[in-house]
Length: 81
Image (cartoon, rainbow, N blue to C red; front, side):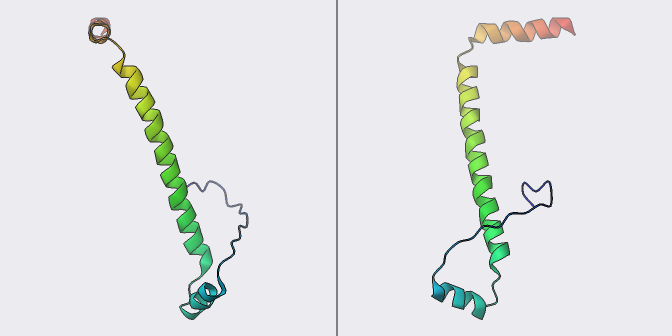
């Protein structure tokens, strides 16, 4: 399970059309697992979007480092070994 570290739970609720509830009953669909999966997927998408934004920021900072400085850092690191 995504993001589950402890076994404490909270209850969330949502209003749905009566017809949808009737169809859920007809087909034996339990809302808990469906809602949990949908929320986990949405949270996962948001986490990935946030990480992608941070990665873009880091890449733009790295791109601003002059090539000569990168070469000097690599040479310095090799000399220390």
